Length: 468
Ligand code: MN
Ligand code: MN
Image (cartoon, rainbow, N blue to C red; front, top):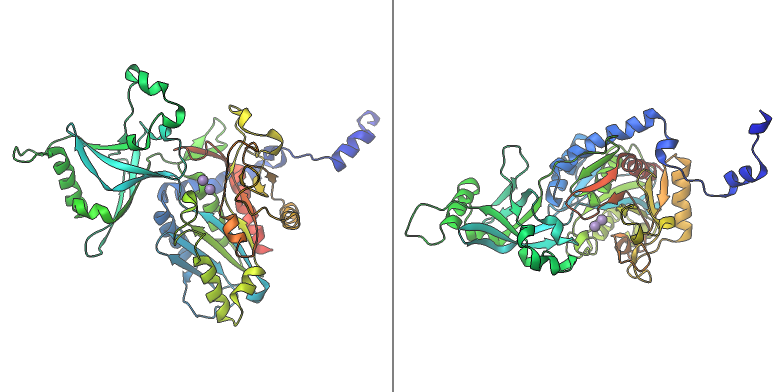
């Protein structure tokens, strides 16, 4: 046995050097099974909540099941009472009143429920060479070439003249048709292949093919277009002019599924940021009698920079907290200043196929747990809130003392590009905030990948934050 005695160097290494290990090697089989089973619920959520409006509907449905009631402005809620507030159908705040006075601050988790996609233009419908197509305008940062030649579904709303709302969801059911952006065959792509990757497919080439059969009437010119519009008129009662007041979003028609022979990962459209939205939602639904008042905010418009009245660069969250504070006789700004936030957004997981884009020592890795990101931004930390060392320490202690496996990661190499989250807008309200989220492979692609264990660890992180 003496030969197994650890050397002084070995003992010191354990004690004073960083020894982060793959989460699979740190968890029991039972714990791993718990993470896997959590992700079954996540996959269901992904299949029903592909766009922000659907995510709000699904969040409200789950919240009602968990005893949440629609928020009543001015009502003095008692400790343990739960409510939800919907902002214009595209963002939602869910809350539970804590035992401590609101003045002691709120625990806030904020994630976004919009994802990159192809929005229809306001005059989308046209016929060309007896094919019918929709013009699109992409939403968020996409590599345009990835969005061709894959099955697409159409989600959203049409508000008819007079205000009647029609919900659209086509391409998800097994029996539904799908739509598709076509691409030129390689045999004839000589000129296209000379373009650089960013120009490989141009914005105006992202046209969705939606039909090919003409209406049988020699008196009309655009026969295919008329035939398609007849189908839409019959199904939804809309005319072409109604499309001007619509929000129709083309998204990949894939279902969420397991990835890998070991089923260790989930592949889906829109992990960014529904993987953090779902985990933050589940954390508040499962939250019981918290000390501090807890809020989960599922917001819109992050992918276009958080501007707009459903994005977090607007005042809706601030107004909500101020209204709540007023009910108890507190100044909203004092409540905000005493609050803490986990900005729940994804991080770029290290991809061994593209090692040159990452700085390995500061990249998140699949299966190393939820990722804590001190700062985001671009170049010299432009456009970031940069959490204080004090707040990083506080969150680190919280996660460690509750067995939440976590890692830290920056978004790629220093001069490699960059990106932002909602953290800066929350920090600008005078709140302590840090990014905490799940590492993603192929971020912003039609099909993104996350680890089941990392997803479960995000849920645990939000849960212990609320319980703290
Ligand atoms: Mn995001
Ligand atoms: Mn994003």
